[in-house]
Image (cartoon, rainbow, N blue to C red; front, side, top):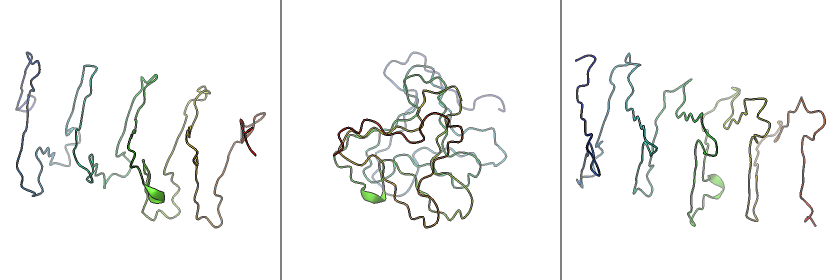
Length: 193
């Protein structure tokens, strides 16, 4: 078959059951994959490894992991150059979010070498201009959009910059269109002593 499905399963009368289940209770510690999908031809650029088309208002992919020190989701994009390791498109957002990182852990202790969310660059990119974090509000009329908001509710530092620069600036503000406002504005500091 060239244009038809090799395997086609229809289960239109399901209630609490599943269309398919892959189950293993093996205790062997050898490295293996319980389910593996391989697109083994470099020319098959139109083949998607796995497509989930969720037409209901429900979660499309859910991962329930019991791992404590291992990575729950590992994306290896080691040969990607001009593409993206992960792309999220959410063009109909109103009060929702494209991504939420949430923790209620009382044991959070990343010290100064890490954080709840980490962006880590270890390669020598020399003089190649790049940004480890890039935030862009790309519509001139979206004047109510804040580029970055930090809401610190605890008696702690809101922003800490540790720079090893010797001849370059630690912080730079570029505001060529500024006419009447302030480049830096500080308000509600009446409690200072």
